[in-house]
Image 1 (cartoon, rainbow, N blue to C red):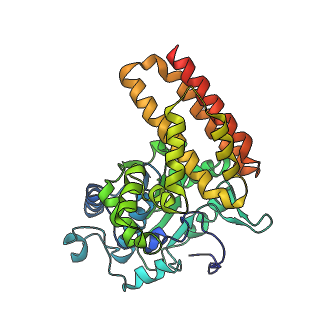
Image 2 (cartoon, helix red, strand yellow; image 1 turned 135 degrees about the vertical axis):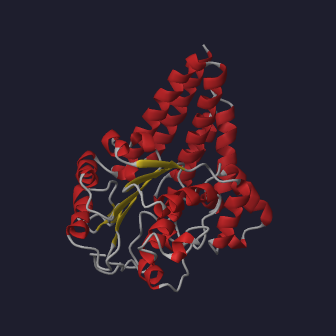
Amino acid sequence: MSRPPRDETIPESDRFLQAPHPRMTKEVFGHDAAQAQLLEAYRSNRLPQAWIIGGREGIGKATLAWHFARFVLANPDSTMAEVRNATDLSVPPDHPAARRIASLSHGDLTLTRREWDPKTKKLFTEIRAPDVRRLMDLFRQAAGEGGWRISLLDAADDLNKTSANALLKLIEEPPARSLFLMVAHRPAHVLPTIRSRSRMLHLEPLKATDVVRAMKQAGEPWSRATADDLNAAAERGNGSVREAMRLLEGKGLALARRLEALLARLPAVDWVEVHDLADILVGRDGQEDFETTLTTVFDWLDATVHAAATDAPARLAPYAQVWEKIAASARETEAYNLDRRPLILSIFSDLAAAARTARA
């Protein structure tokens, strides 16, 4: 990989808290069919050169992408006995390719993600064009080990217009034996021309039992949680390991319950309770609680929209509009490090208005 060794003190945008990075995760849970599809595509010698692995955040998309990249680099010839006899995408952890990938030092693999800004001491809010252009260094040269050159991007949602177009140019004219693996939490928002040139692999949310297994595998502090808390977080995580882990952090479960109670009362709003919650979310220490709040709100909107689509499609518009407004306001608040209190107050004001309009 054409970059210096990573400073372990710098946060990784594609890693959640202290959970193992997806490249270090030993097992893919709950996505056997997706593994089989990737394996068969590789065996067939008709492997699409660009893949979008889509689905809800935290369900194992990146883990699957890393498993596939590791498998291809460890077995660069699809006719190898190891490929013909494989039942999944696992690679022994002591395999040379696996060791180099774990240390981000494999010369034929590059990772594109939001990088660290040394000026602001924060992660950039987007994947920038220079981040994508670094891929050109990999694809200008022959594979160092005579096999594949792989680009893993996590996540395509973070591309801006310029970086998306830079990536498109590479995908449009890919060198032979090159592979683009793109994680996308909202595939519909990926540049349409990128989507049209990629194979879509959509992953479904995990079963609660698989979420629990994944959290136990992640180690402490999640493996130390009680069975009741693990199961409660898994059920509320809606198939996302990331969200279940967040709920087990600090007061995550209690906060989610308070939010759900507030949302259930809409269009009525308990403003005393909302102001109290807003006070909790201010400051750097409230980051994870802020993420839990946004996820709980969007999960409620998702459930409400699905119910309206079945029972009363005409009621969809107010919720779709408020969804986009909240998402845009949240991005702006994070990008400019704004006070979160006004955002929380406006979220409940807008949700109440949408609920009243939908019921009218």
